[in-house]
Amino acid sequence: MTDDPTTTTDPVEQRPSLHTDIGRQRREQHNDVHLTLEDISVRYGSFTAVRGVSLEVPRNEITALIGPSGCGKSTLLRTMNRMNDLIPGASVTGTLRYNGEDIYDADIDPVEVRRRIGMVFQKPNPFPKSIYDNVAFGPRLNGAKHGLDEVVERSLRRAALWDEVKDKLDQSGLSLSGGQQQRLCIARAIAVDPDVILMDEPCSALDPIATLRIEELMQEMTSDYTIVIVTHNMQQAARVSDRTAFFTVDMDDQRKERTGVLVEVDDTETIFTRASDERTEAYITGRFG
Ligand SMILES: Nc1ncnc2c1ncn2[C@@H]1O[C@H](COP(=O)(O)OP(=O)(O)OP(=O)(O)O)[C@@H](O)[C@H]1O
Ligand SMILES: [Mg+2]
Image (cartoon, rainbow, N blue to C red; front, side):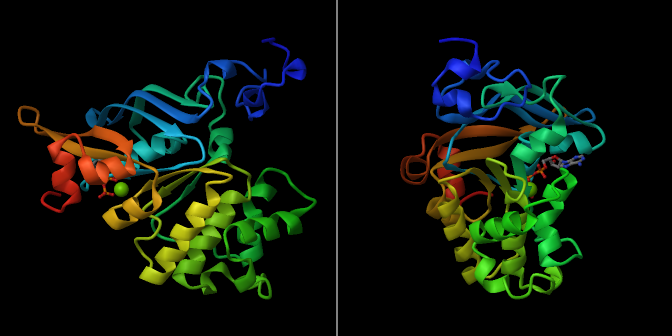
């Protein structure tokens, strides 16, 4: 293999690099792993919220993070696109690689990380702007001036919302139903062309029909995207995800500290039918948490 990206045919070389010197570290990466977490710990000040998580997120699959409230699922999800940088006092140790590159490297631009690795939140949060402007927001911020109509249409189509809104693009995003608003937020995330999408309980504010719509959409999206979803809904994790990671809270009686730890990660079917750890089974069968 050569270092010159113009002369290689390795498909791994075609993937976007966060570094300008395309190809650096790229070949180290296993083809099918999109995000690699190695011994990740997250602290808020002196409090350790999550300790020692090692996890691989496969490309074009849905990975579910489950576990009781306070075990650090949202905290861990935010490490995956450096959103914790925005929280005063939060610090991350360990290594987190995207396409083989450490996203916490000193020369990596966190804004670029968040463009590649988008996020959808629990409560649909459209901006108080038109449907069109919601979707065009990110591309405009990145300096796009031309072709916005195409980007908006493509993103809304991919978020399975186009048919419902194509005749009212100038109406406020806030005029949509909750489920439509969440798909609008997915369209807004997609518009800047990410390849990983992090979703923190994206359906918890939605009714069962809107929830199923989002779940179907997530499954359609795996042809283009890698998805990591936090959910409290065990049926949802079982229905949509390929892999499931179960977290719990480790109680340190001396320090009176509750720290989130990864118990196990496996194929979703395995986790739900023959988990290795009894704590996982207790949680998913509703005996704990
Ligand atoms: N900004 C913050 N500052 C200080 N502590 C925080 C902050 N955010 C979260 N924590 C603490 O970190 C721990 C993990 O919180 P986190 O929100 O990640 O849990 P979670 O698993 O997402 O819970 P839930 O299921 O209730 O959403 C908790 O003890 C929480 O109080
Ligand atoms: Mg949370």
